[in-house]
Image (tube, rainbow, N blue to C red; front, side, top):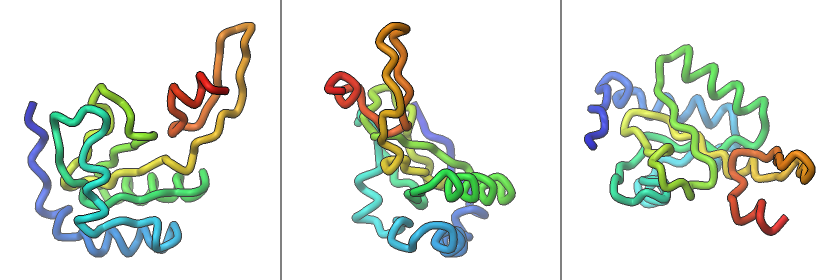
Length: 132
């Protein structure tokens, strides 16, 4: 599998994109340095690795909404990432994309044993559900 070629016009705006995201979330919740980005270069499927352009960690639904709006309005690709444990490659980063790390959305909201249904945030792992 080959990941898509990055858009040079988006890469040229990386600093501006990161600064805009820092105005939406606490500045420490925007990751741009290569060493810290390494933690996000793949999900549980480690066969494909690539650094994301920027990682942002929203803490609220409002922040998430503002990030999504900004990226949509500016034609910036996004990759949502839950806990990063998926083995399907569903959270592979894009070199010209913003990875939205949903790690702070890790609460189990409801467990309905009768209907075998669980409502969770996107960063809840199967293990956490089993333990609950």
